[in-house]
Image 1: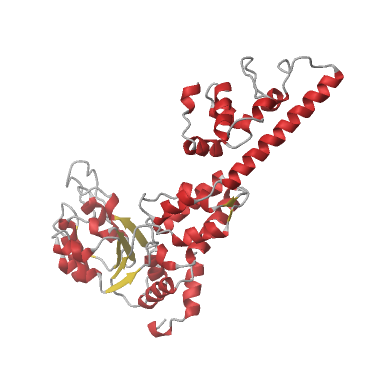
Image 2: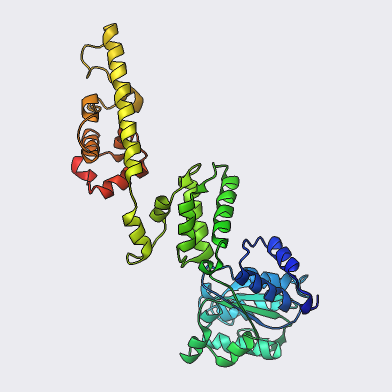
Length: 390
């Protein structure tokens, strides 16, 4: 298609085709640029932070270009050892080095007439950069260990999260190669600059996880949504996906609160996020805890009264409904009595539970009728060391 005919509708179709989520202007502009350059056989450099989704753009360029029916090969230059990368890219002759037991085609030969995507191109050694420059200028290359010049007709799309001009000034990247690769530059926006796309992506990742593993879906409270928008997301889309999937696994069926989100988002101690976490009120959780304890106390007292009237129990230590509920077989275990449940501070309640459970956080959490996660958090907040009671 002629470059000038690219419309917003075509951008939408490209997003649907490659499952790209987001409506931000910066993202749409980058996709539009990729669709426009696709039919024009130029080298393209895709730049952006790690985890921002750079890998989608060479696929768009390949599929919307004239080479779409030919091979597309993606190469992570940073994952190939320096000693073997020339062989991987350009191939080698039998016996050219130790372990070269036969001739081997490289990616540039395999992808002839197609597209090769060089991810993390800044990681290429200078000697390999010289070989790549020759391919871009003349379409020629030499296999490792061979003097025979071979030709390839290939389109190169490169990507990096590094500042290549800074690398050029430092002598780590060839200036002539930089200008050859960057005929067209596509800047992929980082997640923090994409506005409400963060919320769209979070909901999509949560929904996908729920469908894939058949778990109850999670939801995000309004305050949690505000935090998702405010956070810088240094790991971009990849980081957001990891965090949402962690929440979808351990908090399935729950509404994710701001406080819960703060627990799983890594953040430096000097950010506003840390201040927000410290200033958050814990009154709601304390209220839930005390309500659970009072309910449990009433149930214990009712059962004890009922059993006493029937004459089945003369000593409340001889039978405990708490023991049957918690299902502890250890005869040394002594459950919390109703008297203990009704007195003392929350900290003392937890300490008593740990002491009676011999330091077992799992059993103490059961006794207190709270989740282990909540107990771990309260131990930290109340400065309680469980090992002291084991």
